[in-house]
Image: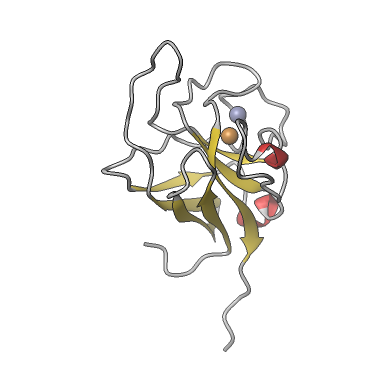
Length: 160
Ligand SMILES: [Cu+2]
Ligand SMILES: [Zn+2]
């Protein structure tokens, strides 16, 4: 668990998954960023049916805006906008395309490295978790409905 970090998003769930909560932390190192996600209350895996999409593993991205918007309705958190894409790349190679979150009885913990940005670059964006897996291929994005969101905020350096 990262004890110190430069930016953080506190996640909350939409009406599609109201129990979701968690944090995503960003720590700057020499050549990039450690990203650590700890998410709780995720829904159980469910196969797709004629009327519903597969649930889990969960697509996970940085989105453009620092606001999440409405938690309710059929398509929550649309105010977060599209994928953060400073390099003009296709989906699958957006700087904010993350590994999917795997749930273990509702809990997902993941630590990974990216050299695509530093924490200060994503302050003012948001983190979004989707209901379905990411295929890293469908344009402009994949993962389905938005089940959790949190704005990425700068963390003040500790007082000395
Ligand atoms: Cu997304
Ligand atoms: Zn993307």
